Length: 395
Figure 1 (tube, rainbow, N blue to C red):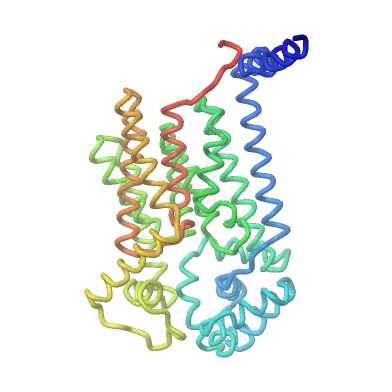
Figure 2: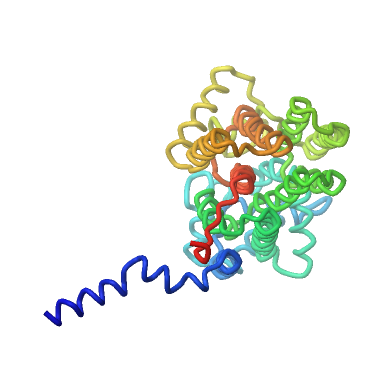
């Protein structure tokens, strides 16, 4: 009889109500907020350390480095050799093998300096990213510079999210933000040499400032983001359309788009870029071993073939389409519950949706990193509207 009573007392002590009663005094809203933010900071630090300690030397690193270190009158063969010497000084044997001979395309471009050099104009259009690699490359190996840029950008991006959660009063949503960032590809982005995280940090900063009504500070950031990735002109155009639809302030956005449009033609014409269709065909229809003399006629069939390929790969291998479906459903649920975002936030959500459509129609790259910042920004707007919170001390 006493044994039974003892077991009942133990069960009562470890019951959910007993545990809640035990932790209730220390789990107030402010403490839960702080714990969530600490978790987010630890997450950012872990991702940064992994990026520095375990970088993935992707093939795109080679043309980005070559574009950064070349000078007027650079000898093609010497530029090719110098680029690969820099990479070999940092990469492991397995990484070097994959970069040089992981597939027939890599093997051909490693063995043919002229073919490798013909690819550079498609990378040189990312003028701000190339300039950043060139600047940091003066004080370090350019290979390290590409990783530093990605890691530093990841910390800036996370810092903007952190400020947003604090000022937007949805700090307890940090675990949700972490999950969305990971699903959208954040774990790998700091480990590779691409302009995507630099672009994401600048673009997210511009989006946040626009939402706060600080257009004067937002517009330069968005223009810099455009210089990192000129395809971001689609987002700038989407912002203009959304401003018209929702009667938002338009003059600054129109001026920004006009400046970007003029810069776009200057950038693409000044570095022998092959043009939209040749680049589209190369990236979305059929990869080419050299861009020398490559000037295919436009084909409606090939255009839709590129769209179909991008859609198929995105749906099978990437997370951004599924994430956006979930977020669109969440938006509808918030609206149905009487918690719709304010007019400025709604205008931004519409601009992001227009951007998704515009980017995919004009250049259907399926990679998560291409849409990363817009997925996260969309989620942040919804979470700020919802403000999920728990306060056990009040139960």
